[in-house]
Length: 231
Image 1 (tube, rainbow, N blue to C red):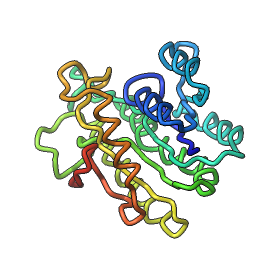
Image 2 (cartoon, helix red, strand yellow):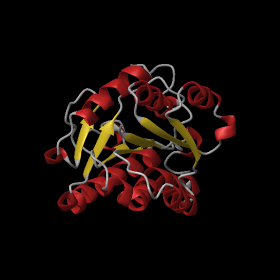
Image 3 (cartoon, rainbow, N blue to C red):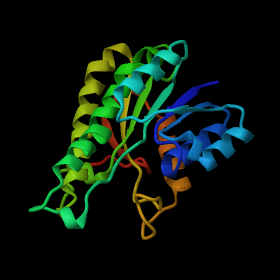
Image 4 (tube, rainbow, N blue to C red):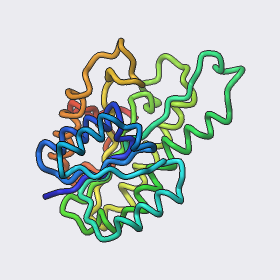
């Protein structure tokens, strides 16, 4: 059976990815910063023997390397870079920007997914699916930005999109695909209660895009419902 590795797996979209992939029988490597506090994820793992929980703070590149070494003999069909950070704050909008928070946004939202791809590329290459998925946002689209604001998040997700597009081109000769996905405005801790869709609908849609992926789509920026998005 196929294997998926998911970052930010303790809540929100990451947890829902774990639920849905576990239900269809995939081996799920669920990574989060503090497994001891991830009650729902631990409950899932207690009910589903195909869920394996691993400690991983994606901002710690040494931890990424250590986990890749620990899992060196695995084949990973799909790597889902889901962990993310929204650090914008109305008190620190333009004129009073928090540059330390901006740096952390780039570390987690942009650099960490690239580091994960680097670290786990051998495991991905030996799998059947050979796919790297990064959860981005429509807020990373420069063409779609008609509202301004959220400079930290927008810029870090736009940079993620650019980095993943480059990876798609660089890895295509090795038959490794790259997908950049917009999950929609989802009712999670990050999305808030006013969001438009539930996590299960978003993840089900993204799974369909992943299931139907062809290498010719590598580097595409796609909404959870399969719609192609502007850069």
